[in-house]
Image (cartoon, rainbow, N blue to C red; front, side, top):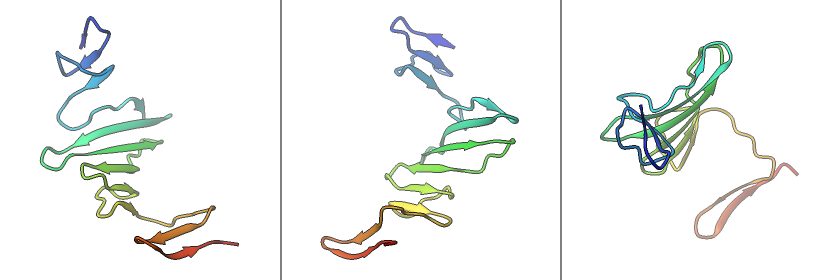
Length: 110
């Protein structure tokens, strides 16, 4: 562990450039335990890295939110193929607009 003169803390690095920088092969951060829940932030892979944020409890790593390097975001799946890729049901309380350059569909529960 290294603390720089500017107050940056590094684990796995001798030259941290952020307030808290953790470097290792698989997981970037894993504070928590198996009984009260956990927060996992990990950067995975080198050729196509992505970041996963998982908040879970009871010792389960269930995969939550993934942000891939191209900007695609997934919920409930670890490999987003679209700008927003959701595995499971969704709920929209304020309506949903599906559009190209001009709106082509709008749905509401009113």
